Amino acid sequence: MSHAPTKPKIAISACLLGHDVRYDGGHKESRLCSRTLADYFDFVPVCPEVAIGLGIPRQPIRLVGNAEKPQALGTRDLTLDVTQPLAAYGQKMAAELGDICGYIFMHKSPSCGLERVKVYHANGAPIDAGGRGIYAQAFCLQQPDLPVEEDGRLNDPVLRENFLTRVFAYSAWQQLRHTGLTRRSLTDFHSRYKYLLMAHNPVQYKTLGHLLGNMAHTDPQEIGPRYFSELMATLKKCATRRTHSNVLQHLCGYLKQAISHEDKQEVQQVISQYRLGIVPLVVPLTLLKHHFRQHPDPYIAQQVYLQPHPENLSLRNAL
Image 1 (cartoon, rainbow, N blue to C red):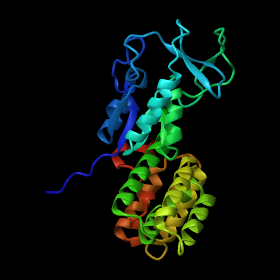
Image 2: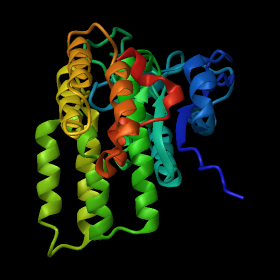
Image 3: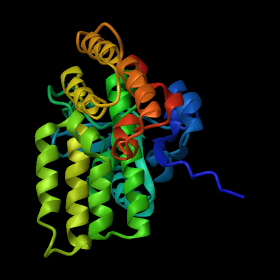
């Protein structure tokens, strides 16, 4: 009996899954997370404020002081200072959640927000600069390569596709580490990610290749983590219609002996329509996949670019 592949784990602010853990006793359910993504990922819900002993309901907290290094204080009782407990819990969870492949944080939250969280002067007036939630800041410092995103930004199709591409890449890397880092396995991994990296950042793709090219006298255990950090940084840059079109043209090159003149013209026309914003990315990709099914190429067959996430998520229909 074959085991179904385990779903990648994603940590998530518990309120986004509909848990009633907010200061007012409510939640902020994200249907994208609780309905759509829940089929593809195992969610690990976390609410740092409840975890450090704040009750439900509770007086809200907010960030006060310097935007770079704010404190988390009670809005009614300024002697309530949970800065240290939230930071400590962030470090603790970053160590405990070693097997997650991503984290979805609640936006604007003084504990979980990733950016532009409101910070106030001691007198209650807002500061112009935004800050980062105390828990999120401590967590991300410990796991700098982990794909993280805020719930609100996931409504943007480009950011959503980018985040989930990184989550699946992170998961693939965890599997590689589990089976063992060797020079061969690192080179194969890079080879599979060639066109995906090229779509995100063509210059950085070359840099990563050079890093592995100089591996002859280096321990894969040492170069592997460096390679992976740079890979994740590269994938963070969103691919564009221009870079995708460039990759689609590269893929076409593998069909030039195999398909007819008319078929080539059709492929070129569809790529051009995609580049101009007339059709989404799924259209030229579907056509190319059709031709590669009829004329298989072993190198193209292993390219992550063709399927960086499950097809049923339809992430490329809106790109």
